[in-house]
Length: 283
Image (cartoon, rainbow, N blue to C red; front, top):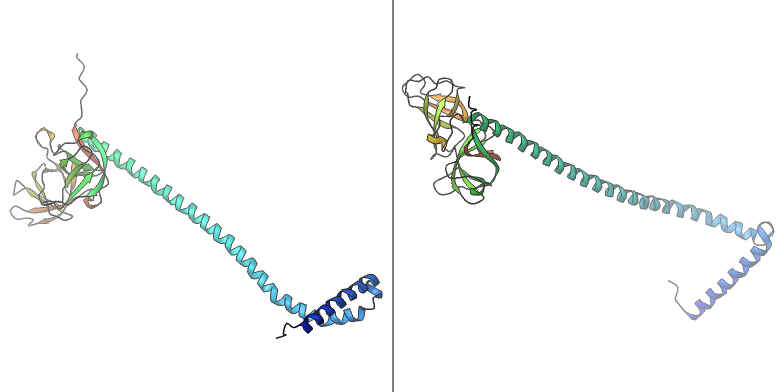
């Protein structure tokens, strides 16, 4: 290490003065006739390898810097494309949700037309298991929408349950699967009637009033109908028989799988009364 002394500073100053003088002489003499040409050539010979080495060292650094710049641009582009992808996925989900809502609303309207009932359509907004009831949900329809206690609740495939309690804008629905719920039903192809009970699981238990009535897997089961249509209008689809216990013996028991998945309810319709029939024209 060179010490910063007065002698050192004097020597450095002399060298700088000499360098400026030589540069002035060289500039005035021109490239070909400069007396310093041999010195300059020798310096070039000495410094050229050093310059090449410096270039070899610095070029990768420049390329790396450029690569970092390109990587940053690529990263920004990836972020932009990712944001666009998220937005498109959200739009797709909204479109599918609207399509699903429309399809299920149309299916509910078909059931309402077939059973002569009016419906108000809403959504399940919460699960609400309460004391004594294991299968209940809350929907976003209440007294303000014409919903009353014991109104039948449907999904797009058929009966889902009945209204247990009502507030101004919500209602609690007891689903078919709850062991407390019983529905009067009819087997469509034979006309036999019986009772359908929840089991707390995926299947419902069917017992016919006639112990000798024929039961078969695949038979369609629908609501028998309550007096005045409350809580259950007649003819609402419920499910099909998928298993029979004690077949061939007295009082066989059948198990019915609901057409709609009760554990995945979304769009529902609540019966608000019978459809008004147009008055007949007088002849």
